[in-house]
Length: 109
Length: 113
Image 1 (cartoon, rainbow over the protein chains, first blue to last red):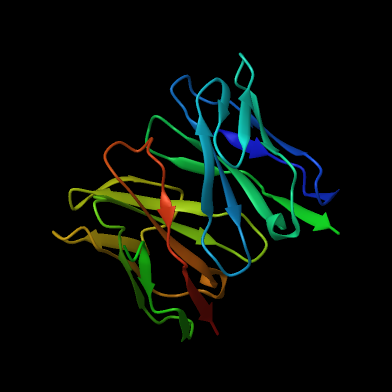
Image 2: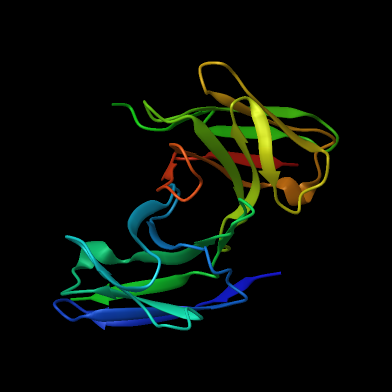
């Protein structure tokens, strides 16, 4: 059974770049990796999705090494409003979704 | 566009009872997935519906069942409730293949006493 692992928590200051890594063992060759942001008592919100190498959108970048056993979410210049829990999610070719353990990011002023 | 909507927002039940949660997907989406999120943990995949059929399910007992209607809305039913079923139940919708971005609703907070 595929599993994911993330750091439990991270602290950062406003304006800094934050990198959150997710390790996923036994990820299948056709699995995508997706990252979500979740605020208390709300549903997860899509941040970015990728399959390999690097993907960038207007809010984040996603780095996936060639072996695809990990992925790193990069948030440039975080603000207080980025304080949330961040989850990686990988999709299995058998239509199953597995969320990571979640990283609680706290942005300090 | 209202996005993904879920009802009710909160629900309190007692052990042994049955509960039905409802979800309306985002406009244009035809696939609905359900997740259970216990306090302080990540969401756990329950099952996914597409074309009114359960396409795949996670590691949940048969007490958890679902349905998808022709308009793509969905219900999650849980029978013989246990204290451990207390959680936030999330519905997510997507379009086409399962690799597409999932949009999550606000969830239904179920408390079992």
